[in-house]
Image 1: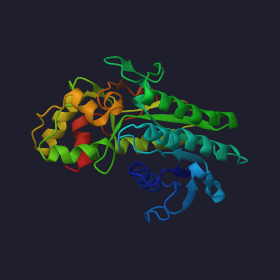
Image 2 (image 1 turned 60 degrees about the vertical axis):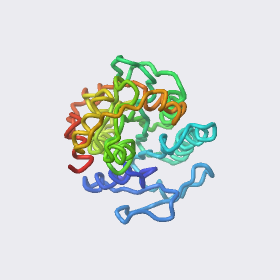
Image 3 (image 1 turned 120 degrees about the horizontal axis):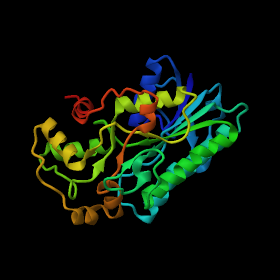
Image 4 (image 1 turned 180 degrees about the horizontal axis):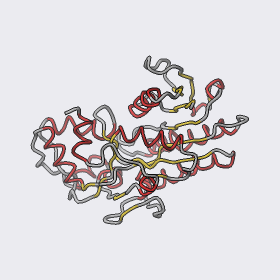
Amino acid sequence: MNVLVAGGTGFIGQALSRHLLGRGHRVSVLSRRPSAPDAFPAVFHWDPEREELDPRAFSEIDAVVNLAGEDLASGRWTRERKRRLVESRVASTRFLVRKMSERDPPPRALVSASAVGIYGNRGEEVLVEKSAPGKGFLAELCQSWEAETLAARGAGIRAVPLRFGMVLDARGGALAKLLPVFRMGIGGTLGSGKQWMSWIALADVVQAIELAVSNERLEGPVNAVAPLPVRNRELTRALGRILNRPAILPVPAPVLRLIFGEMADEALLSSARAEPERLAALGYRFLYPELLPAMRAAIKI
């Protein structure tokens, strides 16, 4: 297939492009950057805020993968940061869908990132794709994000929002931020450590995206998470064990709220026990169903 990746220069986008190229697909990338790694055969300019997109990007495209969006954990959620988080996900997806819909014929499929944050803080509840969405800024952001993705169906485009858990890779995401702290021996549980964390290995992320791109029966939201979610304290112990560092310094919830504000409750202390019901129904076999092997592979240990 000929696949166009928006946000293709991020750590997930680069891994996905390498994977798809290795599987015989053709890959091109949408990027705001003037240059990109040599592994990408074609890089087309886009700037969703200015509604700029090189029209050549959609030439003979079968499917679009949308990974665009500012890092949720790059700073406190001020009013301006929230605006940018929404703009970089919701508005950019709306613009992308509009440009896809203008093609005749349009690309056959849109696979777009979302997050298990759509469920909000749900304690011990097991969360599958048909579970109701939660409350709070992050949950509402994900709902709006998915709504723009699913709007592509109006143009006859198959739409699949992938609800990612914590993606395990040392080069990006939450794990990259945790590693320096744990390597210094000052890592520990967040709050009580009882909150559930849904996670997925990067190798499974790229395979799940390829499945969503190629499987014409798959439509609607999909939980892109490993089948065995863990509590925060289990993830903390596993990371300390792999790095051979103590992980005994808990960070109390009030301290997290002081440092991170609203983001602490919604992204660090929130409990999301999501399971990949739809991937399981398709017979998907995870490369890394268990945390320790996944984390070792992510850290290359």
